[in-house]
Amino acid sequence: MFNLNELIRKNIAELRPYSSARNEYAGSQGIFMDANENALGSPSDQPLNRYPDPHQRQLKKRISELLKIPAPQIFLGNGSDEVIDLLIRAFCEPNQDKLIILPPTYGMYTVAANINAAKIIRVPLTHDFQIDTPAVLEKLALKPKLLFLCSPNNPTGNCFQEKDIKKLLANFEGLVVIDEAYVDFCARQNYLSWLKQYKNLVIIRTFSKAWGMASIRLGMAFASADIIDILTQLKYPYNVNAITQEAALRALDNIDQQKKMIKQLLSERDKLSQALSRLEIVEKVFPSDANFLLVRFHDARKVYQAMLQRKIILRDRSQLIHCDNCLRITVGTPRENQLLLEALLSYTKQGK
Ligand SMILES: *Cc1c(COP(=O)(O)O)cnc(C)c1O
Image 1 (cartoon, helix red, strand yellow):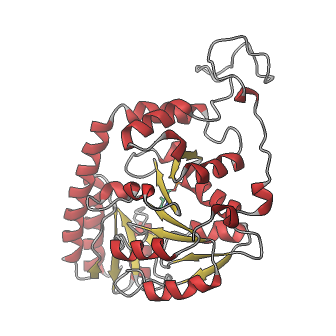
Image 2 (tube, helix red, strand yellow):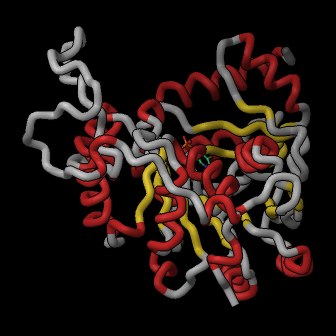
């Protein structure tokens, strides 16, 4: 039923990618006179004069070992945002093809779809923030190319039900993209092991959240080698720079530290959640499987402004469907969380 050749845009299938200077020679030793780099070096204190490995071999090897996914099934991008953009670019013919998103969800799916002139089919989540599976199944008749699922979902913080995701994977002829940006904060779920079974599955992850490396801009995609090949053909040759590759390699050698941070963030999240739910101005703190909380206030706009005046910046999500009067609050350091609670308490007392 699923046929990648029918799914891909014709011009992309016929594409002959730019062959970068280092494509033919994989060695690191040699006299490199092929790429017009500055052979003398750079004014920086780091050796940055050479182009980076366009295939990120070392980094993919480490990620492959860590996650037990073969390297040909891994794509690395300039943040997950690049992955999202490339997926749409590869499969959605502008002004013609469609994709499905499930609002309220991550805003970049819409932005990337708009940039690529892909038509957006919106199937809102149910009131308890789960997939409205019958409604999505109904939309499959419109032959969308992609379906974006974010689990745990931003901004609602919850995981979708496994049985719903399974049903969609089994019934969809396009690609199901599961964005697992927050998966490290959710012990119960991750869908990497499903790649063997479902050829139409793409999983996106990022170094920006649990890995604490938002500034290096590194995103990952996992899928069949055929899908990964398509993304690789499409990307800019040097989409992941050398500084990023090196920083990621160093971080991957320090997994204990990452695990420790995740544990601490989860314990801080649960403390913050309990403290927030005791505040008068809070109507509801939604359960979270991520490193943030979605919180419904009686008057979100006022709270948002009052915090902003105190230089505490929250994310106002109150305009999104099912999120009226909701702010999204990222878990901070213990001290930052304490300061937020004190600020909210003083606001509660003063009313401003
Ligand atoms: C933060 C976030 C990302 C991360 O994007 P990067 O470009 O990798 O920083 C991806 N997806 C979701 C849902 C997010 O919330």
